[in-house]
Length: 166
Image 1 (tube, rainbow, N blue to C red):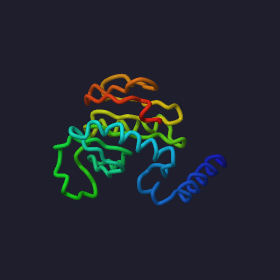
Image 2: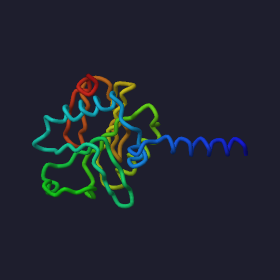
Image 3: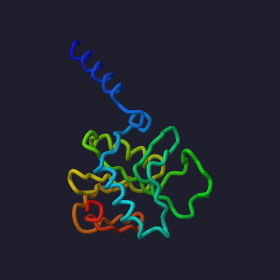
């Protein structure tokens, strides 16, 4: 019983220590490595700018779920981009999550499952600590890329993995 009380107290303490950003977005505050990796992914996807729109930290309201991917990728003609929505209800084609040291793969897999349930076609879990990217699709086994080209056949995207971690 004492262990349970201590765990609850630690949990309350952790919530009190979380920043507004973390509480609102449900994920850790980005670090320098996270920010650099996010920029690198955006830059690597730039070669697809005529086909896809890249959005960072956009709030998504997908059914009952409120999610904030690090990067969301939409078809260039998917929406009226002059409309300034605070939350997007249209699911992106791709959600990219950059995994921080405080996040577990199980947590991220659960988040990916929420994306897939809402109609997202691909999820990339970028793992800076491993210099690799785990590619997830709803109906196939995960693929891990740590060298060569990351190939997302679902979206017709190929990017060199080294561009993500340079």
